[in-house]
Image 1 (cartoon, rainbow, N blue to C red):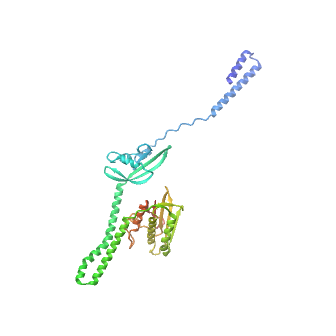
Image 2 (cartoon, rainbow, N blue to C red):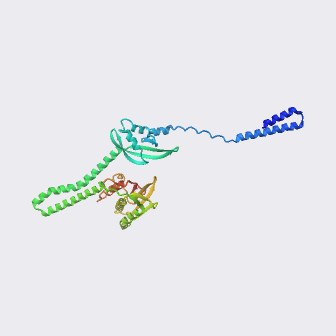
Image 3 (cartoon, one colour):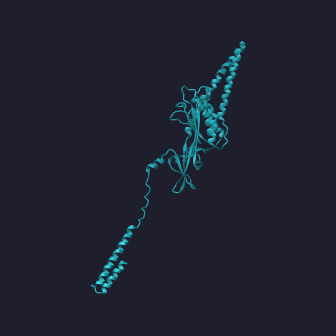
Length: 381
C-alpha cells in the first residue's frame, strides 16, 4: 500500500509542476506513511512465535545397554499380541538349543499375571525350578509386562541337603536317646528273670514302658510337623483376632510380671486366611517368647508386642517381638528345623509348626534381629 502511494505521488509529480508545494508535501507524507507501514510489518514479523525446535534424538546409553545385556537375570518384554522378546543374553541362552527342552513351553510360562512365584522349567537336563517375577508398566502409552527369570535349582538342592542333614542329626539324637536304654534293658531282662529279681525286673519294665511312651510322643510330634492340616480360608479382620490372642496369652505373661501389647494399623486391616491356624501360629510364638524371657537372673519384666501393618507393595506384615535374649547369632537358619532346640526340655517343634502353618497360609516367616535386642519374628502375607 505504501508503494502504491509513492507511485501515485510520483505520477502526480510528473503531471504537475515539480516545484509545487502541495505536491512536495504529498510526497513527504507518502514517504512517511510507507516507512510507518514497513516498520509495523517488521515489528509483527519480529514478534511472531518461533516454532519449537525438533526433539533431539535419544542419547545412546552404551553403559545401560551393556548392563542389561550382561544382567544375571533372564529378562523378557511382553506386549499383547506379540511373542515374548528376549532382552539380554541370559534370556537368549535359556531358549537356545541344548538348554530348554521345550522353548515354547518355557515362553508360555512367562505369560503370567504380575507377581512373584516359583515355576518349573523343562530343560534338557530335567526339570529345574526358577523364580519368575512379572511386573506391569506403561511405555509411551503402550502396556508392557517385564518378566525376569532366575534359575535356583542348584541353590535349592544345597539348602535341601543341609536341611536333611540337620533333620537326620536331630532325629538320630532323639531316637537314640530312647533306643539306647530300651535296648540295654531288653538285653538284661532275661538275666533278671532267671535270677528271680522281681523288683529289678519290674523297674526295668517300667523304664522300658516310659521310654517307649516318650518315643511314641516323639513320633506324634513328627507327624504334626510333617502333615499339617489343610487351611480353610476366609476374610478375617485382624484386630479382633489379635485381641483374642492377647486375651489367651496375657495371663501367663502377667503371672511373670510381664505385659502383652497389640497394634493394628490401620484398624480395619483384614486378611484372607484360616483364623484358627493363624491364631495357633501367634500363640506358639508368644509361648516361645515367654519361655525365652523368663527364668534368667535379673531379667527385666518380659514384654511382648504383636503388630499388624501394611508394608510396601500392599503386603501385610505381622511382627511378634519380645525383650528377651534373642536368638543366638549363627542359629537363625536352624531354629526352624524340626526338633532343633537350645532349651532344656524343649521339643523343638514350635517354630517348625509355625513355619509349616504360615507357608500353608501363603505367607513367609523370618527371624529379624532387633537393634535393641530381643527376638523378632516377621510374618509376611
